[in-house]
Image (cartoon, rainbow, N blue to C red; front, side, top):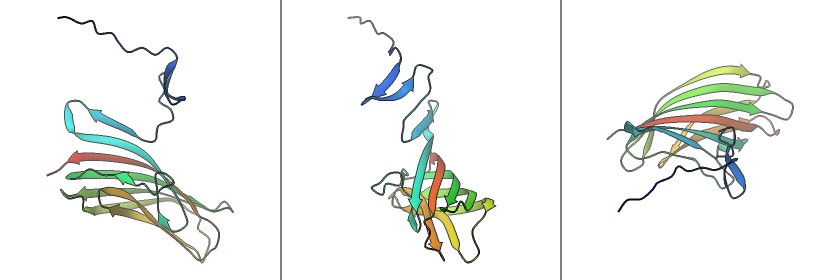
Length: 166
């Protein structure tokens, strides 16, 4: 028995729960993360995330503490573009490039990390630090604020490129 398959068509774009996902100009909007795969190599992918946090802690994807998921048995190249800012407008900006391993049971290890400081406007006597952080099958950044009571807002645009590695 034959069947006629038709192309998916959504005039004006595509939405979920009244939020536009793809608009009429083919722009992708309102997504929490984006994963890109090569159909020829199914063992690798790249994903984009936005992490945020305040003062000292582990940066999060949302307001319930979610971190970037990392598949077991993978090696990942993780690049984070970092911005820390206080209410007075003092800024810390950097890029952290990390090589990250997640073994078969989800235990994670930072294999290497390099930080490039773009702007360091941290006031004298204050400490603002950020470093890669791994949990079971997850990745984020750990931040430290010391020497001030002003809030430090952290924002990181993060790209994760992963390949299966048994």
